[in-house]
Image (tube, rainbow over all chains, first blue to last red; front, top):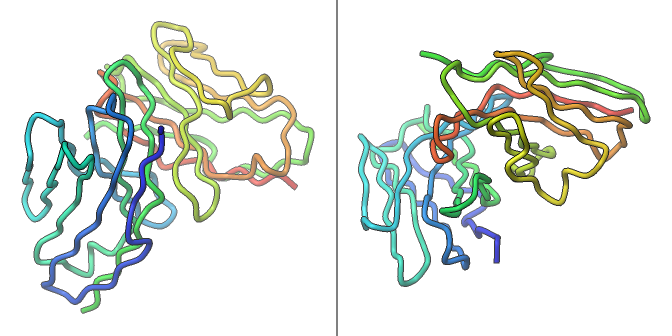
Length: 112
Length: 112
């Protein structure tokens, strides 16, 4: 019940395309859902985050869509660029807790 | 922009030896964390630390692990008797509240 399921494992898109990564969870106590971007050899960097009281949050080319009833959330990267090539992790945290539970990660490759 | 720093960047040790991984969290942050990432796998929570005590720990964080904030700036993770399976990237993170966690660049621990 603590798991966060992420898909796809890998994704290849063309420059200018839309990248979509999906996550699902079971634990209804989760109330904070961040996305992290990780480049090889680096630590995860916070990209964007959402709470269940909104269905969508947009920051620049990055948008989180949240479906509370389905217990799913997704990251959309518009106008994907080669510099976006990285591993993306979704995560979730309970209201009362401090631990982030991460998904398995998606390796995104954006071809020029 | 303030950032979490970690030393060393790479630590090689023999099985059974003790290692100490060091972190300097962002200066006004109150919560401190250790996570680990085995090569190619997802990021896993180890422990969180607040007000000079452990606030939450995972099942991975057994008696061989300990954390300490020896002074006002450093946060350390000690592994008392390293095992081969402890080989991983160890990330320190910090936050002002428990949600927005900022990760350091990591220490790669190799146990031979």
